[in-house]
Image (cartoon, rainbow, N blue to C red):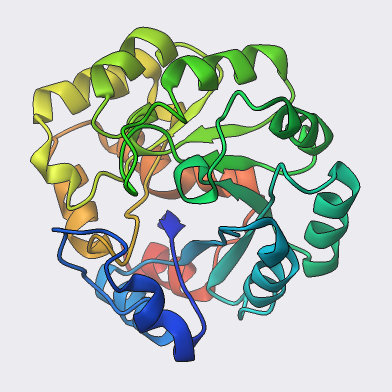
Length: 272
């Protein structure tokens, strides 16, 4: 099973506008539509893609969760959004109404810090019920000061029952800091690193996998800023043991999200 833990989609009528100028100087690998993501899935033989909602402003909470909650769940897995400027009760009600499988945090786009006390109250309520995936580090017009590896470490230690996933190996463009503060902590890393994880030193990636553990690494592309198929190829080229690769590409996500194998995945097994 292959599961891509990090994708962004928008309604067809606003996808182009949502992406326009959002990430300067980074060529896009897709159009941000659900049809475009299906094509990317097919190109990479991907069974499931996790789709992450982000409410940039507090008043967009319900709208963002309603859209992501309505996607076809045959191949797509919806992760909803929260906003610390809304009450804990509002956030939980919106997530439950949309029947999402997890929650996405993007402090840069949403204009808060990961150490925001209002955010902690929401995360405390989510612990044990929803896995949470958080943007960490630079990107999205920020320098990374709103979402640091130290903040992730502190959340993980304070909320041991929270399943916490740190995007971009724990810190986009801050990977050394992530290694100092997050290796060995009860935090999952996702492998997204636009424009490609292949731009990172392979020996560094092997070291992270070895020291943090392949059971705490999740394949992620950050489509449409990267090609899922090419990201899979980059991970395969690392030459890590097949058992480790199996966990990273989908085994860990299958466990966290309690996924059943799709027919396409069972067909692959039968053919091998």
